[in-house]
Length: 255
Image 1 (tube, rainbow, N blue to C red):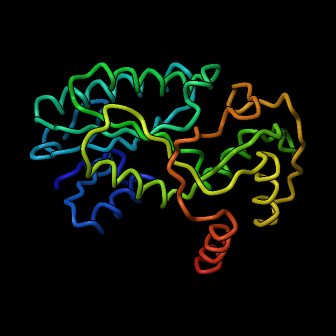
Image 2 (cartoon, rainbow, N blue to C red):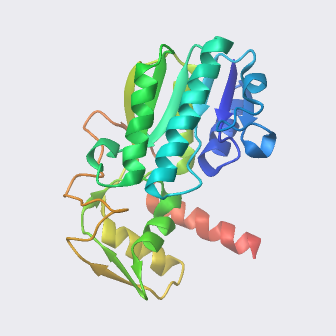
């Protein structure tokens, strides 16, 4: 099966490409680095030629509200139009769990706009909502850093390994369109502040994590379960401590 991965050179996109190839699919890597730009349409028609499915794993290069909205709406609109011309029969996109509950954040409003375009398109689709990746924990810490402190709410989070999430996306892409949404998550729940504290301790980061029930998550207020998946979520296997061990070992190998 020929499956085009938009954002196929990024962290999650490259993992999806690897998983598809492992399962014997013809995975096409599409990103500006390979000559495919969904904003300008450059190389898009050629990349989609003969494709049965498209996975959109791209992300906005800017996190400013207006720029993020522009990226997701224009990129997705161009992609859906090109898919209709090419006869693509399955569009798959990846978004964070809790997107619809985080509308105070411009980034999550942009993702909601993207999903609305997909649902309104005639192309059959699947939306995969994933909890936050273990690999994204450092980004969460940076966004919450104030001087030498990291201010986080003690809410629940159920993160997942990017590799596991990529496997789930690959399986969805190779299957029949859901014309709906599936959630995937890791096997353990943590308090967000404790999770970041563990990650910083593992990397010998001297920043202090401060527990603040009113701290925002990329501009959005959180309640206890905002970042958690629903009861029907698919639970993926790799545990955080195992991932931390793998991550630490990879740092040693690259030093």
